[in-house]
Image 1 (tube, rainbow, N blue to C red):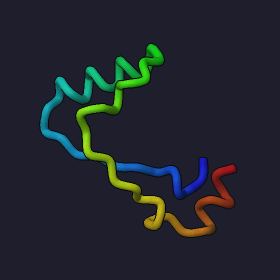
Image 2 (cartoon, rainbow, N blue to C red):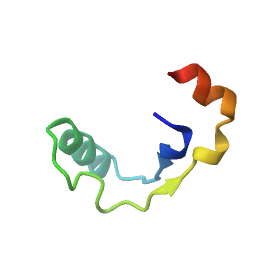
Image 3 (cartoon, rainbow, N blue to C red):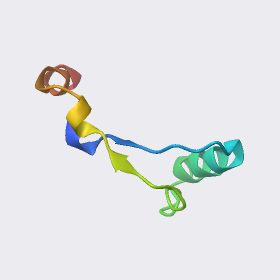
Amino acid sequence: MLAAEHYQTRTIAQEKVLTAMLGWAVGKTDWKDGFMWNTIGSQFGADDAQHSG
């Protein structure tokens, strides 16, 4: 995974997290809907990307 592909979201609703993770696990395409996603790839250095693959 490239650093530019890292995203973050925040919520205080445990039920939303559980629903999203279960949806992801079974391959639903809409598991990430209902969240505001922010790219955080810039928080990772080039060294991180080289060592991860």
